[in-house]
Amino acid sequence: MKLLWPVSDRYYGSPLRIFPAVHYDLGLFSLGHVRFIDFELLYSVLILTPLWRRENLAPDRKKKSDKT
Image (cartoon, rainbow, N blue to C red; front, side, top):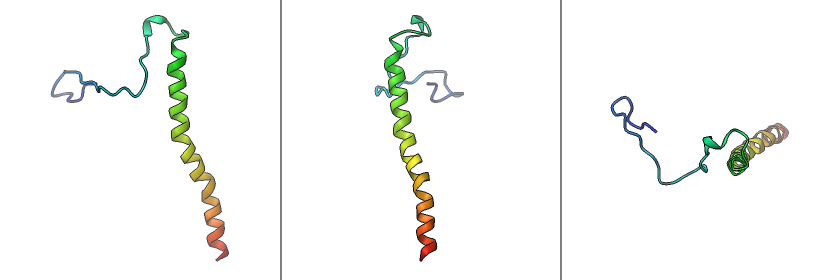
């Protein structure tokens, strides 16, 4: 990633890899990409589950406050 762009054209990389590497030279439909897709789905579930729960609990909170 060009962290200091436009001041510098140098690329910087993190030693911590969040996502596994994708090998583009293997083609679009490669079994090697299954691992990457699994990580993408896992991250999506981890991010969207708390948001979904928050939305589903919001009407319950409103109903409880109306009763008091």
